[in-house]
Amino acid sequence: MADDLSTTTASRRPSKKHVAIGLAALLVVAGGITITSVTAANAAEETARQCELAVTGSKTAATTAATSVEQADAALEVVKSVALPGDEGWTSADYAARAGAEAVEAVPAVEASEGVEAVAAVDAVDARPSGADLISTVTDGRTGLAKAKAASTCEERDQAATIEAATKKVTADAKTLDANVAALTDDFTVFQGEERTRVAAEVEAARIAAEAEAARLAAEAEAARVAAEAEAARVAANQRAAAVAPSVPRSSGSGPAPKSAPAPANRPAPAPAPAPRPGGGGGTVGPGGGGGIGLGGNGGACLTSNGMGGTMPC
Image (cartoon, rainbow, N blue to C red; front, top):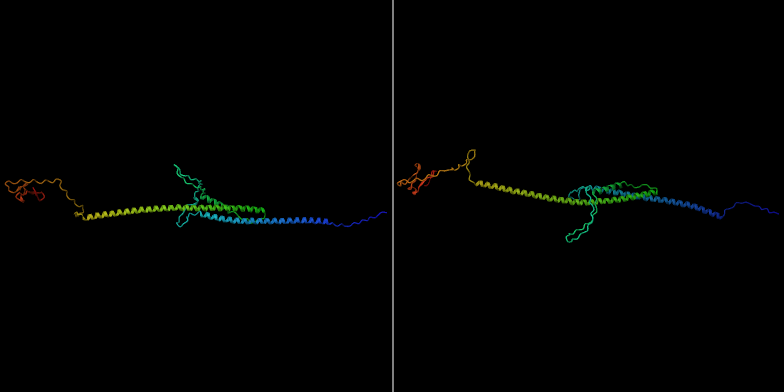
């Protein structure tokens, strides 16, 4: 006889194994989502941090650049001055016209030897730019640096990198400008020292020349005084001589004083003495009826007229 196999159908429950696998899968998916979320959050935070650093550095660099520009402007204004330090009121030449100097190579010393004189060593000297070159360098540097602006916004890392690169350039340009300003001011200080030396030498030369001119004028004045005194003495001597000289009679008329009559050129010789009268009458008869005094008169001496109303020996 055959068996009736009855079969019945009912719902099957999942096994524990399948449940564990499912839970593991859910955990993996959830973990991946969590990791992705954390990574994204960390990335955004890092971007914000980099942007903040970049913007802060940019602001600092802009402040430094502004300070450098101010110092450059002040130096450019100072080198325009021609007033030299000190209370003498001296002035210098224009610094912009200061010429540059070429480099000098070092020369070793040479010791003296037979027929060769010793030569001192020469130190090397660097080339020096002209005043105009130094001024131009500072002017160009401050013009470029004055355009630097601080970054205000940053949202991506690429922006942060760009800002940081600009910050580095501005910082380097500011350092270069500061160095050029220092070179300008140092050279200007040396220039003023050289100008003080030059002006002092000119002032001293002018003083010596003024003293020499004053001495020359004093010598001329003294020579003029001595000459005047000598002339005054000469005039006084002439006046004294005229005072003691005999007076010369002058004509009462307005014409010139009469001159004394000159002596006759050929005065006639006195007449010869007359011969004695015969018989010793004691008298003589002069020529023309005039007579002389005989030997008997005047002690026996013979006298005759001198032609001027007087007598003279015969």
